[in-house]
Image (cartoon, rainbow, N blue to C red; front, side):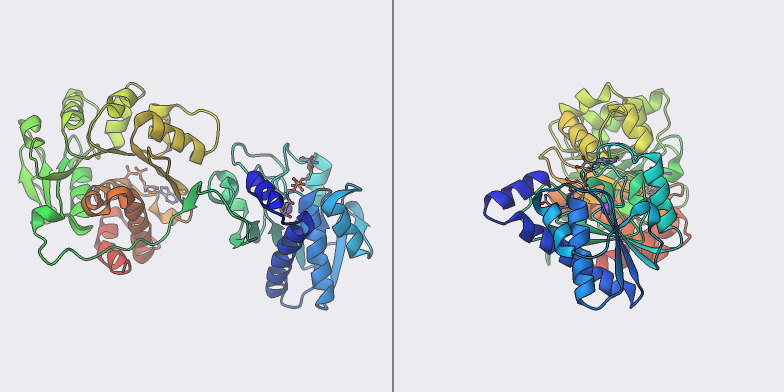
Amino acid sequence: MRAAEDAAFASGIAQDALMDRAGLAVAREVRRLALGRSVLVLAGGGNNGGDAFVCARYLRQWGIDVAVAALPGHTEGAAARMRAAWGDAITDLTEATPRPVVVDGLFGIGLSRPLAPDLAGQLARLTRDTFVIAIDLPSGIDADAGQSFDGAAHADCTIALGALKPAHVTGPDAARMGHVLLADLGITLPDAARTIARPVIAPPARDAHKYSRGLVTVLAGAMPGAARLAAHAALTAGAGYVILAGDDAGIGGPDALVRRPLDDPHSLLADERLAAVLVGPGLGRGDAAGRLIDAALACVAPLVIDGDAISLLGEAGVERIATRSAPTFLTPHGGEFDRMFGNGNGNKIDRTAQAALQARATIVHKGPDTVIASPDGTVTVSPHALSWLSTAGTGDVLAGILAARLRSGGDRAAAEAVWLHSRAARLAGPAFVADTLVDHLGQAIAECR
Ligand SMILES: NC(=O)C1=CN([C@@H]2O[C@H](COP(=O)(O)OP(=O)(O)OC[C@H]3O[C@@H](n4cnc5c(N)ncnc54)[C@H](O)[C@@H]3O)[C@@H](O)[C@H]2O)[C@@H](O)CC1
Ligand SMILES: Nc1ncnc2c1ncn2[C@@H]1O[C@H](COP(=O)(O)OP(=O)(O)O)[C@@H](O)[C@H]1O
Ligand SMILES: [K+]
């Protein structure tokens, strides 16, 4: 964001003009959300405070009852000019009284350390029981989501300026933002990470047949229910033919699933028609599981590795995955990710992108803020999954959907799968079991015209 702002300034946009755009965008939302109630604007000493003064000035101009409480500010620069342009009463934070609507313009992306306890205390006092609208970020949050500071504010609505920052979509502070709105400041941004969008999924071609739509083989292990769930999801998400391979795979599930024994995994996986192989759901962690993983890694088809297979492969698996000739997709939850890539520093977006480069694989790093990173550097974040997804088996369903989307989705397969999974959860919810999720995939696909 800083680089994009600098580029905008270099291209001739004045800092005052950009701050005016930011403050005006915030003021418009405040006017809309305040519904005539009186407003207290909190302004910090930096540019976030500059935006706050612009916002207060527009609100006053529109006849809204607005007061400003501020921290001491710089004497020069755009923020100082906006403070001067306000030209009205400014109270000290400690003397301010709360109003029904509070605009938090104390700190934005410039925050580099936790708020001092007395400041955090004042902020808490002024934002308790009020409707809080944060400028760019609730004050006290690390925008890069690399760490969580004590004493950070919360908001009912956050107006992200110019672009979403990592903390808006990932990490524990994402829950402090309330409803996030994005204000376009008209500055060009690098194509870094994107949030997920509804995909377009075309129906099968006129001359499609079951193999052209994709043959998917799911390897079952110690807990065949998980593999069955994944196989059922693959069938429902658009695969033409799904083989469920394993000793105990014959019980239950749709009759459209083709059952195969797993005596010779290598020859089973040598089928040239394979669009995808899935290993991991309910695999178990014994010797038999290890042999299946070896066979899966050796096959020349695109491979989805999930659950137990990720845990079993661990750190040593990264190199084995990186040297595969066909594309590989990993779908770890947080614990599985750490087992394979370590729980190092940095936010989830950066860590996942780094892991994708290391393993030369597409990584779907699951959770409330699923991050999808590809070895070509593409990153997509899905920030709004329903928390009802936190139930056993939903990960198996996701792995199955992904295996099904590989044939027609190509590079976009992982994003398609995550979107469909998330959408099916909304259609099935609030409370549901993983099996029910599968029943809503058809409707989710129908929305992808
Ligand atoms: N660069 C620009 O001209 C624009 C910036 N914008 C706004 O500017 C914000 C960033 O502005 P700044 O870089 O001035 O930073 P902030 O206004 O977020 O922070 C202000 C100052 O607080 C100090 N500080 C950091 N942590 C602190 C702490 N814990 N306690 C006390 N002081 C602390 C820092 O030294 C920093 O100078 C964005 O979030 C956005 O709201 C927008 O106005 C768009 C244009
Ligand atoms: N709190 C949550 N909010 C939103 N989605 C969640 C949450 N917890 C888990 N999920 C999603 O649910 C799925 C769970 O997968 P996983 O942990 O592998 O479970 P399992 O192995 O039991 O299927 C993932 O897609 C994950 O992103
Ligand atoms: K703020």
